[in-house]
Length: 301
Image (cartoon, rainbow, N blue to C red; front, side, top):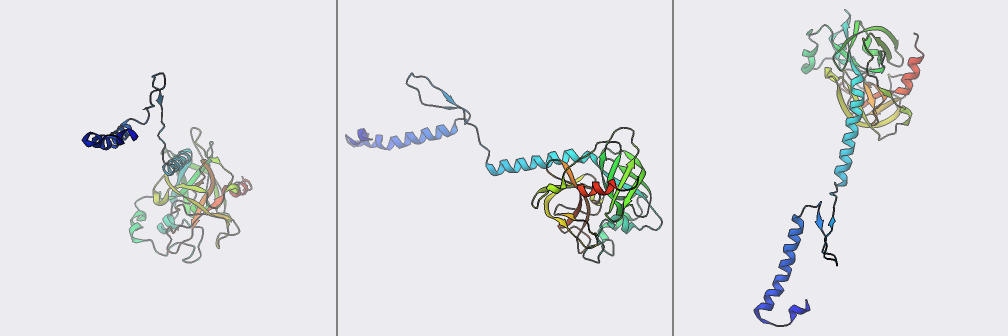
């Protein structure tokens, strides 16, 4: 400041040094004031006004939080209506089929199941349960109509479903279509069941976020996330059905489960994987729900 440049001696030096020091203290003090109430300088009338400052969340964190909330809402909308299919296996069925008969693609090691049960899973099917978990299902009508995969029902003498709230409901009617690997079950329930909302699978595009919900490896109510990797995927061993491909995890026990968009709508029925060893390798498939509805509407009553 020009005033400080006049005069000399120690006093002037102190003033010249003190000005930036005082400014520094003022900045520090301002930083320590809560951001929600920052005072402006006095107005000409000698009054003070308060400026309210809103703390802004970083854009990246905000977007991640929004995505997490969308995942959570979609999962909560569908989870109550995803069931586990269980049943008593016939005399000709093997424990291997009960756990790993979960792929519709049986083309050697490329699209199929391993010839031997992995040692770390052998104990799961050692005869500890007479009613093994077969796969998953989706309640599509509150009266007790369930959509699932046909291949889960092979060599099963008695079927029932276990709901999200642990009800055990007997299956009283079955309609099956082996060409599309779809089946429709009707269960006897004492009260209306929670049902999913079905979306439009034709609107799905590559890169869209989706969830898979099912009971992989007998772990009920499991939710996984991924994207649509391809649409109308033709896979050897799956007939002429154009499948949805996703990298959301699909494992043994997931078949018949739900593929869900971020609006909480079911857009597909998880049905199989492409794998060299029978386990998840990032390539899973689901039957588009629009195709599923068209096929089941043509099944005999």
